[in-house]
Picture 1 (cartoon, rainbow, N blue to C red):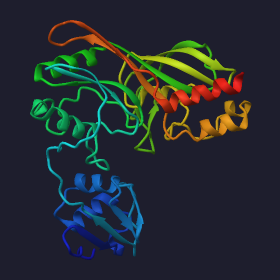
Picture 2: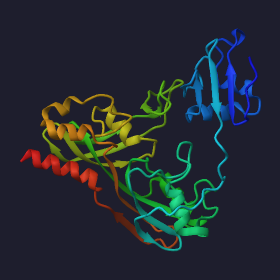
Picture 3: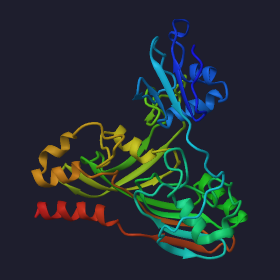
Picture 4: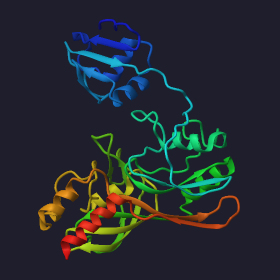
Length: 333
């Protein structure tokens, strides 16, 4: 194994025969010496590694003899997120809570690949010292989250007691929360539930999947209830959904599992749905080109964690989703 090159934020290593077949993250960690394997793994997954100049994101890949692997270590960022002037749509605010309507495209908290420009950065700018230390430095005030491309109602805590009680309420599902989604096809039955455990996908770390009980790939129990609100033939359905559990990507995974993936889902919509064939060309192309999962957290109701007052908030569909419905209605006349 040749020694890594300088400068210290860039490491380049040639694979010699004695290291053939070694796992990439372990190989680089041993070659570099100053980084732990977990740190190297995270950097690889975040897109900071190359093999002969071509990006590689799989830490478990076996290294190739004669190949040159490079790892770029990004400059350090502040441990505590900084405030950024990002507009927020505030539905309610008092000394304990902020209720907001999160737009699609906004990441909730900093993470590899999205170190700033997040909801947390916006909240720090808006609330300042009121959020300091609440729920941890990296995610101040965050009680729950929505996927980057999911829009809708969120609650943020502004006091430690509110954070703890809201976290308990979400864990116990002691609240009312409804999602609206546009899905391909018409579920049968039109109302029902999906009770299927969810775990990490066997080969794609970025995806979740329905997994069987027991064994190495057993997942966590997950239950989604759905009802069809509207349908355009058997092509597309507008669904109202409620979660009895809160697993990563739960609605998206469950609807894809029963054959009704969400319109625009970049992860779980793997091919053109058969249901799309019955639509006119123009509306079909619009739906297939929709750039995000058509999923909106439409309402949230809960007891105020301090006063006990019943609170309920709802937001309309964002313009991009409403535009899809309008076009479907126009073509069905």
